[in-house]
Image (cartoon, rainbow, N blue to C red; front, side, top):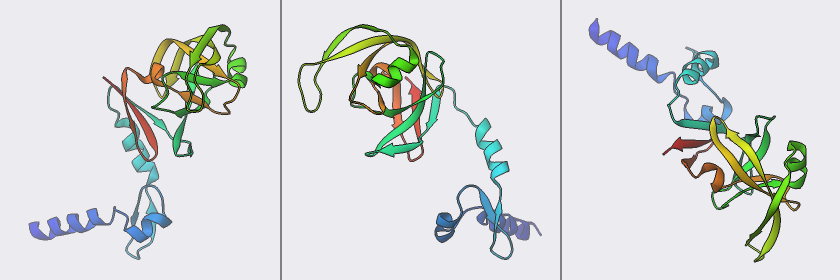
Length: 176
């Protein structure tokens, strides 16, 4: 009886994992019934993963990618979120002129920077009280304002105190 129970548990456990051909067809958490049809278990799985948080790890879902660069939702000064590209090569956070105006960011000075195509480019710069991405936060941050951008760049002056891990569907900011 004990051996049969172990075998039954093992077989039941296997039915919770998607087979490669079904993984493309059915997304999320499910199991297969006795006829091989998927049974939706998202309600169970979502509750389990929602409580499985790790202190000091902030996970920002990737909305989409632009030229391979992940785009996440970011809040400036506790205002509604805006889309930002996570650019690990950018030394500063850059905002499109339109977004800076929407957020009420005032120009405080000029920053001279080198871009991939030009050297010594002058950009207006302002300051925000806070930048927040999924709970990862930086305070009193200088932001560069660029009329040429359509989507902002989240740069090193935001995530310099975090280790950044870019996964398939999420960007993790891990406290150092």
